[in-house]
Image 1: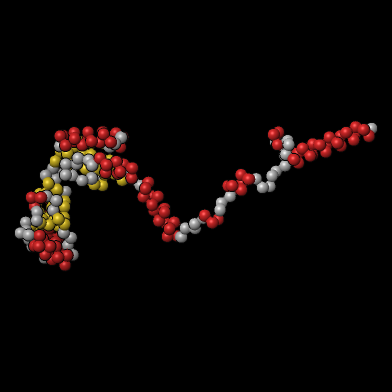
Image 2: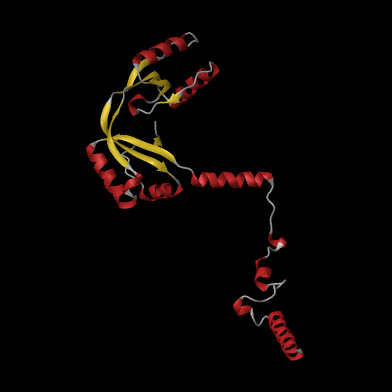
Length: 218
């Protein structure tokens, strides 16, 4: 009776020793190690931490948002020949799903115009006079109207005439409404989502825009 009990006790001690020494780890029967080397290697060294100030955190978030932001840009209108050259350039360096050249009609534009003046000095003098009247003046984009000033751009002659009457009451007597650009039909380039990556590609390509510039989509 005592002999089986003694053998069972010896066997239990052998199993406990094997468990305690980790000899049975291969069968997932081993004590939990309190100080695992891999856990120590994964601990964060507090000396390498940098606590961001509120301003630094805000700037970091702004930089991330800016890098992920995209905008819609367009240019035109182009003639068929200009659009052909532009299309070939885009095909060479930009994925086809990132751009679109499509038929477009650019409406006529009227401006309230002051000019032509005899010199840039006269233009600067007129700008100063208009600034005193709190009237915004911009340079004209049509070379045939330079040197001169635009006091506003409108999509109809009636709107331009109405605004001319308004500013005339404030002492502007030499301005007039003129047709700055007649209606034009052609091809328009549209880039629906220009992000940092696409902008870098466009800068490298130096697109042949025939004197036109990329602007925010309307």
